[in-house]
Image (cartoon, rainbow, N blue to C red; front, side, top):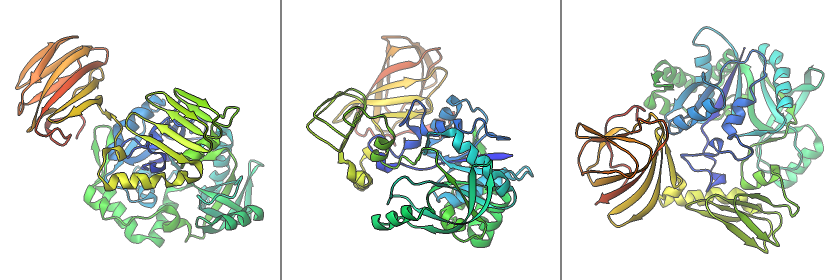
Length: 473
């Protein structure tokens, strides 16, 4: 049996302003109609003896992850929530422990949620090629056949051939893992022909990984066992103990196990792989026009070439430029040279240093019940557009510093205030005084949309006291 383990904990800071900490790149449809997470789930279809995926994700993203996986046609995924990031080695250890909880010992197919693979058939052939080796105790990784000297990836140096599967995919002993090189060194790797990009994808038995982790990082495994023992169900999710997991040593699979074990094997993979690590990477894999531009959204160009142009909320016009990245969202605009795409993360660092919301949230903020968007804000007032999905409800709550006025513009609202309930339809409104306990629900069959006008001395999102919540917040 193959137990897919999808790691969905990244933040994708190099793809700001489209990728934000609370809405990262794996949850975005950056290439095609599906999000990168959905594509990862979909490429499992057709593999032999494959189980429903086990997804490890940041607890902040849990409802988005669950909904996207459901939309991808998978209704039985197990979603384990990380209270904090401890890198890939502990995440996979938790997954291995969960996979063994019922006494089975499946193969773990470890996949990052934010990668693009354009030739799914070749990917699946490589996985099948690694099954026997993994069953025999090998820790298999998939090395990407490089098509250029790349300084943004680590490399795997292949050693002796150890087998051939399906007549196509050879497997090699891993001679060494190599850190990200400078350009001159990367060129020598390409010329040598026995170096592959480190993809971060793995295939091994759950027990084999746990044994090797015990050998090389026993303290990490002990912490993971303790955290897994306290695993608790929360709605459709599994929660780790926050304090125990936070005390676990943080490290990657590469450093903790793969670079130290004698059982590491690499299968070359040439399947149109890209980790979508920057805007320039998206330009590399996109469909370009005659001038070499990748254009998405309402974009006008004049004498523009070799650019990535994205308009998310309004018209974007560019004149007489080349080799630029221009990305527009409702609350931010990025302009960068394609050669400096990796440095976008430095801007995100500046935003976080200034505690600006643009690093974390979009103007439209998704919630498990729907979404809200700030329309206007000023001294002592804020106007929001709120959308509530059919059958959903906000928490029973109150505010210490603000009052709220709700106007229904579409659908039906059930409003509870201080124990009294009323139904509002389009063009009707109600007032929620400061300090009063209240709840908003959508009892109808279509989305509820309303305008909320807040007024008060403090309008921050942390001025919410929840008394009851269907979503465990």
